[in-house]
Length: 182
Length: 446
Image 1 (tube, rainbow over the protein chains, first blue to last red):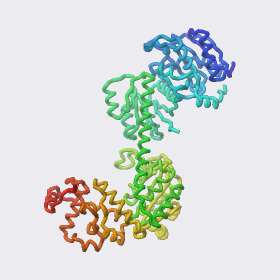
Image 2 (tube, each protein chain N blue to C red; image 1 turned 90 degrees about the vertical axis):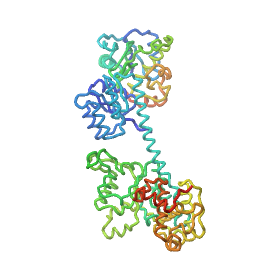
Image 3 (cartoon, rainbow over the protein chains, first blue to last red; image 1 turned 90 degrees about the horizontal axis):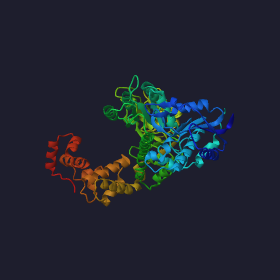
Image 4 (cartoon, rainbow over the protein chains, first blue to last red; image 1 turned 180 degrees about the vertical axis):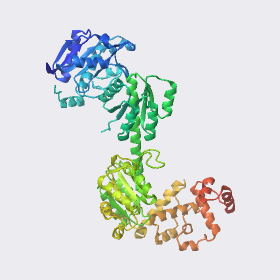
C-alpha cells in the first residue's frame, strides 16, 4: 500500500507508450509517482441496454470500492461510452476531494463529430481528461481560465482549447490541499 | 468577489439528485437537494436559492404545483422544470406558470451548462440592474444643494465630514429647508453610496403600516399580505435608511426601533426568522426632540441612540443671499421640464423675493417659481406673477374669476392640457372644464 502515489488502472486495451505518456503528465502536475496497472471488470454488468451505454455512477463506485484502497488517488481508464442517469453522456467523473475517478476515451475521436481522424488529438484529449478528473479528486473545482485543464468542457472543441496543465491559481489551491488521512 | 450561485435540486430519484449534485459542485455552485416538493418548500422557507431545478413528476405534490407555490412566495425565482416524459402541454403550462425553462431528461451536458449559465447571467443582470438603479437614484438630486451663504457652507462642510463616518445623524430644520436632500448628500458621499438609500416618511403611515413597511411581512401575516415582502430595513442592507419625521412615531414603534438599532436584526411581521441587516440611520424632524424627551413623548434612550450627530439646516430667512442662485436654479429646472428656454426674473420681483419671509422655506420658493413660470407671460417672471403676500393685493389678481382662471391654467399646464386628468384634479367634469376654457379664452402656451 502506498498512499503517496497515484494509480492509473486500464480497463480495456491502451498502448503501453500512451499510458506512460499519461503517467508523465500526472507526475508533472501532481508531483507524485504514478503506478500503471491493468484492471479486470465484467463491463456487461454496467451496461444499460436501453441506452446502449455504460453507467458511470456504478463504474465509479466499483473502482472506488475495489481498486482504490492502496493509493492516494486512483483513476480508472475506459474505452466505453459512459453516462449518468441525468446526462446523455460524460467524458469522465470523479469524487470531489475523494480518492478515485474514471475517464473514457470513447467520445474523443474526431470521426464521432464528422471530423478527419486524428489519433493524436484523441489521445491528447484523453490526457487532459485524466488530469481534469484527478484534479477533482484533489478538491479542485472547475476553473474559468480557458487554457487550464480544470476548465469545464462539455464538447471536444472545448477540450482542444485547454492544455494538459493546471493554471497558476489551481496549482496554488493544489499546494494548499492536504493529502487525505487514509 | 462574486457571490456563489446557489441551486436547489428537487427530484424523487436519488441517482438524479446525486448526479446533479456532483455536477454542480464541481462547477463551484452551492447546491442542496430535496427528495420531494414538500421538503423543497420547507427548505425554501428558511433559505434562498438562485435557481431551483425541479422534476415534474414526483409523488405527492408535482413540480408544476410546486412551481406555482414558489412563484407565489417569490415572484422572481428562477425555476427550471425537468421531466422524463416531455409533452407540449406540460411544457407550455410550466412556462405559463413562470418556469424559466423546461428540459427533458437525460440532458446533453452542453445544454445543461448553457441553461445554468443563462440563468446565472439573468440573476447577475437583475442584481446589477438593482444596484445601478439605486446608484443613479442616490446620485441624482445631489446637485440640488444650492447655496454659498455662510450658514449653508457650514452645513455642506458638516455633510462632508459626517458622510465619512457610520454614525447616526439627526437632521433638524424647519419644514421645506431640504432635510431629505441633506440625507441624500450624506449617503452619496459616504462609503455606503453604492448600496441603497431607503427613505421612509414616518409621518405618512399608521403604526401598523409603518411596522410592515419597516420590517416587511410574511405572506398571510394580515389581510392583503399576498406575498412575502422585504421591509425597508432589509432593503437598506449595506446602505442607509432615512427616517423622515421621526418625531411622529408611536411609543410602541419607538421601542421596536430602538431594538432594531441596537441589534441590527429584526423579524418580519408574521414571521419567525431573524433577519440581519447592516444599515446606517439618518433621520429628520422639524420638531424639538429634546423638549419631547423632557415631556416624555419621545424615549430618551432612542434619542441618544439617534442623536450621535445633529445637523441643523438653516431656514431660507437665515440665508437670503442664496435666494438669487436658488431662483436661477428653479427657473432653469422648470423651464427645461416644460420644454421652454430659461426666462429672466424681473429685478423688482427678485428684490421682493429677497425681502419675503418664506415660512415654507426653499420648498415654498420652488413652488412659487414653478407657478410663476406656468401662469406668467413666458418671457420673464414679473412681480405680479409671484404670490408674495401684500404684492397679491396690488396685483391684478383680485377677483374670484381671475383666481379661477389662473388656477385652471396652472392645472392644465401641469397635466400637459390633458382634459380628463385636469378635470379630475379640479374635481369637475370634462364639459365644465371645456366651458371654463372657452369662458376665459385659455390656450396652451407654444
